[in-house]
Image 1 (tube, rainbow, N blue to C red):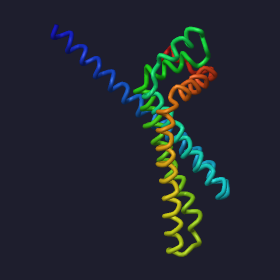
Image 2: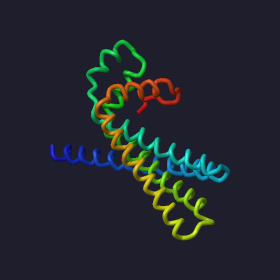
Image 3: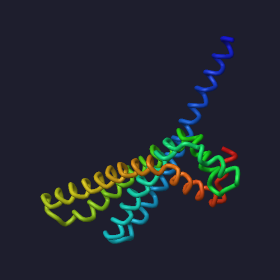
Image 4: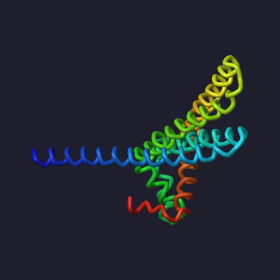
Length: 191
């Protein structure tokens, strides 16, 4: 019996480390893609489009944070009969709830945090572009205003998203489930 418990603990520990390595690899790839897209777009656009890119990255973080919270706060009961009737998105919603820890980790920690980091980097690029010909006092005011804007939109948006994720978790997961069902290269049966 002791060997079986030790073996089980070792398997669980190995499984956790594999998950950590997968999530680190996923984070590395997503951050490179987001950074590449951000810097590629920002090189050739005016400041209005640069701000639009910034708001898109902030919005991505908020949306994924909301999905992560919804996954951890939703009950699966309501989706069982829908899944049995083969309603598109219901089976995927059940999968999201069953894997809520991983879904929250990917949505909140990977995509949400990377979006925050890329938002900050995008903000820094915008600040550098705007302040190149201004005095140091004006440059400081612009820097503080843009940094404050990024922080307040991110934090306020995520706070609103958390409330929305908790109060409308079933609707959110059902919508995400429909998207997953629609995307042909996502197969939850293999995961």
